[in-house]
Amino acid sequence: MVHVVTSHDRDYFGGLLAHMHRDRRRIFVDQLKWDLPGLEGEEEYDQFDTDQAIYLIAADHEGRHQASVRLLPSTEPHLLSTVFPHLCERGVPRGEDTWELTRMCVSPEAHDSKTVRQMIRVATVEFALLWGVRRYTAVSYMGLMSQVLAVGWDCEPLGMPAPDANGKMVGALRINITPETLSLVRTRAGLRAPILRWETRHAA
Image (cartoon, rainbow, N blue to C red; front, side, top):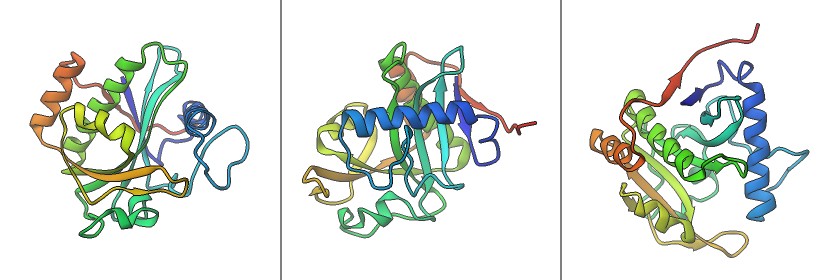
């Protein structure tokens, strides 16, 4: 199952979120060597980990983080609009039905990295169809963009790639979401039943 974590239940999921942020640091900073400002301690946060952010988190039976992604409404400041607007030739896509997909992370300790990565992909589509999201935007390094395209998403580039602050080429994508998208990713993952677990709980 994949948990939907909003600002209303972050206290309840505090331990799982902390594990997610630690894994984000291990992946993005320690392994990929991202030069991120303002890092402190063992966890990775940025200016977009706000109350508007929604996290989809796959956890194992013991409640440990396996994989996750952060979703941000395009009507609020987000990575593409704030840091990479130059990647969009016709302006940054915005609207109530457009969200940004960022910080997709698979734990180095995941029991089956391929399976949990597929679960997160399915969860993003289930969330979109439930939440009225018709498209996602994403910023991706060119080396990872081919993996995104290989999934079979209905997607299109938003402009020409450009180097980031470290000289690595990045590009922006728009991913269109339809009921057919859900059928595609579920089939690829070998899943039939919904995997999102949508709870609103509050710490006692």
